[in-house]
Amino acid sequence: MEAVLEELIAALRCLPGVGNKSARRMALHLLERDRTGARRLIRALDVAAETVGHCSVCRTLTAASICARCKDPTRDAGLVCVVETPGDVLAIEAATDFQGLFHVLLGRLSPLDGIGPEELGLDQLESRLREGGVRELILATNASVEGEVTAHYLAEMAARHGVRATRIAQGVPTGGEIEYLDAGTLTHALSGRRDY
Image (cartoon, rainbow, N blue to C red; front, side, top):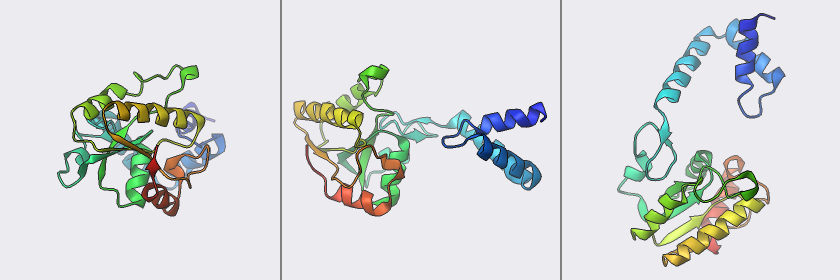
């Protein structure tokens, strides 16, 4: 196989869930049947890689310094939902009518992996709580051991600032990832949240 084709296949394997066979199938499809799509993909990836960063308020992905959600005056700034990834934000937005704000941790506490409060930007979240105005912190971390530890840490942080901490309701399976849940499960989990 030619080096250029091998490099394309290797590049596609960086995507989650894409093994060698899937990467080969994608590469061949783009080169044999959809060169226009390949060029569009190149342009979109190039623009995104150059312009997308993290919101300075909530840390989700955005091409602006502050994302559209954080700028939206119609959203309830007193209700902040803490999630692990930008994918979790998209999943909650797509499946529910949640109108509060978000805070994206970009991970979860995992001392064994060297991930502590500093790596999760918890100082930014604490600043939001300290400023006042937040009345409820919805803990929507994943139902894994690390997610539960993170939720417990966040609940203690909220308590120090007199902010109510709630945990999303069960329905999210243990070890499950919020980003991959169906709309019904997410809607039930968010609407049935409880005090932590």
